[in-house]
Length: 205
Image (tube, rainbow, N blue to C red; front, side):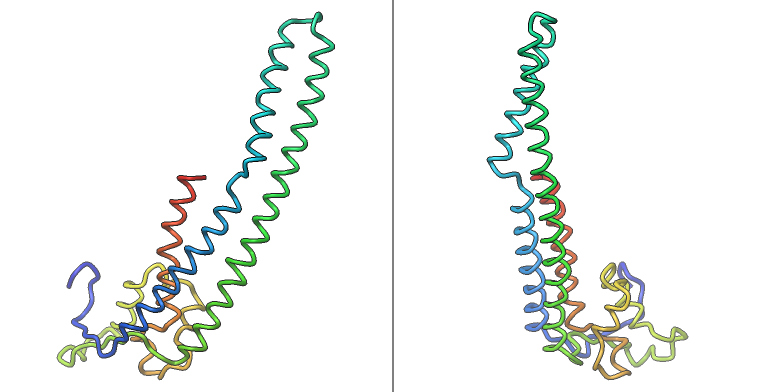
């Protein structure tokens, strides 16, 4: 029975070349998009220099403040410099955050939708893999054992909601429940690669 309980099944149809191609497309696209976002999120040298300058000014201001009234003029001058530089750095952070949001919207939303549309057109109605129950267990009470098995096998991609139905549009009605479409294969690569890139971002950012 294995790790996912299911009746004995067999592959009645599989397209290994198309499966590898779709997995490669999903993985390469996800890595490319996430790397673009990574380098866009990474602080440029100019911003790092300003932050270092601000930290140095804050330290110098705190040192002068400890000297008391005798260093009042110098302290006031340094405090104004700190406020001005803080505002400049804050403005840069806000502008960069807005830029990242716009880029994420275009790449992760519109870009993914465009890629999915292209794959949908090329693989419309074509099952990449189909499983069937062995003939000697066809009398099982379970209505759709293959469908439940595939849902468990493709978790969590199988729970993208309406996307699962879209990936099977055009397939024969009797075959759709026991088949995996091209979009599901590509999405599985994107989900897996995305999780790895999340760890990459968390470590380096």
